[in-house]
Image: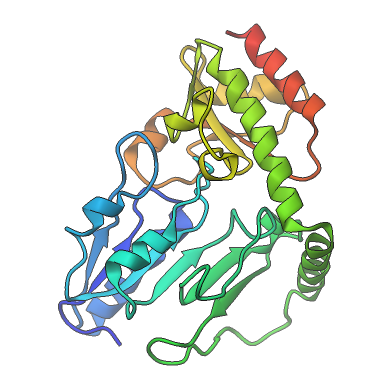
Length: 288
């Protein structure tokens, strides 16, 4: 239970779905006479990663809950939630948005791997039909989580598709999928690095010729960029006319930068090929 003066840490530059519920919870609590504070998780300038060193200055004795992201939906980087746990201590519940990681890389809820209390993800990012998802709870800290909802006919077809998709992903092997998508993203970022008209968002060290261990520094199947002269919406239409399905807008990211400038996101998965990446780079190079 939250009391007056308690604090929630929220990622203000992650997907809006992992931001908006918490100010809403703050408003609902205020209607009941409970005033809690929503504070921003700090970010490193230019990289898109959480600033775990600055987090020391944000966490305090009234920190009661943290919302974080496993894999960033714009930058494609692992947000290193274990570093957050190291700062907030063993007793603060952490809710992890795993929409971009479930189905794309191994996700283990073992305390030695992901010491979080809630994991949430959407089914359509894991090859299932839209309108499905899941919430996992450890129930080790605080009151036992009891799932709620509304009465009525469930999305039976969607739920069946989610079960089938997760079974397929497990059989295919998420470690193999991760190696494949990381390699494709590395080829795309390597190509973009040599095109002067493009700016790749996120950690710039991953664009170096030798970025270190691939699974640590490379993007996990997500590459987001801008053209320095062509608006992102127009670039998205150009790529669509060439047969590429990309996302071109603010990408549902909270914060002023993305909303103002927009960007183009390429999301790679097990069904994509090296030839497709090479063809995409050829089209982008023709606009350089």
